[in-house]
Amino acid sequence: QVQLVESGGGLVQAGGSLRLSCVTSGRDISRYIMAWFRQSPGKEREFVACVGNNDASTYYGDAVKGRFTISRDNAKNTVYLQMNSLKPEDTAVYYCAQTRNYWWAYSNLPPQTDFGTWGQGTQVTVSS
Image (cartoon, rainbow, N blue to C red; front, side, top):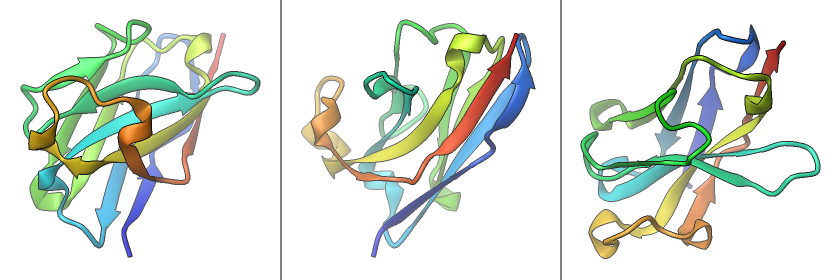
C-alpha cells in the first residue's frame, strides 16, 4: 500500500520560512512526478509546485514563484518544499501528491486529476 506522509507544517510569522517534507512508502518515487498542492477554507485546492524526474524539471504556481522551491531526494523517497518569505495568504493545508502514471508519460504540467495518490496534509499558518 502506497502512503504519502507530510510533515514540517506549523505556525510562522510573515516573512519567515518553513520546510515541508513528504515521505513515500510502498513505491519508488523516482518514476513519478511529485507535487505540492494547498487548500484554504472555502477555496478550491490550488497547485503549488511539482518536480519531474530531477530538480531541473520544476513548475510553480504564480502565487509562489520566486519564494518556494521544490526538490526531491529519490534515495530517501522524499520530496521537499522550501517556503521562504511567507505571507498570510500562504496559510493553508499543504498536500503532497503523486501522478498516476510514470513521469515520461507527461510532456507538460499534469492536470490535478492526474495525481492519484495524496497525503493527509500538513497545516501551515502564517501570522501577520
